[in-house]
Amino acid sequence: MPHDPAQAERLRYQRRQDAGYRAGEEAVTSLQAALALAGLTLPSLCNDGPVGCRGFVRLGGCSVDLANQLAEVIAAGAHALQEQRS
Image (cartoon, rainbow, N blue to C red; front, side, top):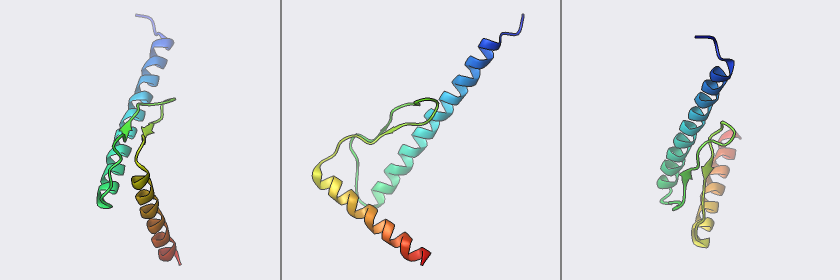
């Protein structure tokens, strides 16, 4: 059977797509866990599959109250990191 460079390239592309998908799954799991520590849940958070061989996480919509709570948690975490670095 002759070597088919196009087939080899398709396989490499599929591996990159698979890696991107797995990265998205891991990111979703990580973000869900971090949000849970703060008592928050983004209802539409999901892995949206690879885009250009990179993971892509869809954060989705949420209520204004949840958005404000999320902003507070992020700000508090950012302040804590700044204090650690000082």
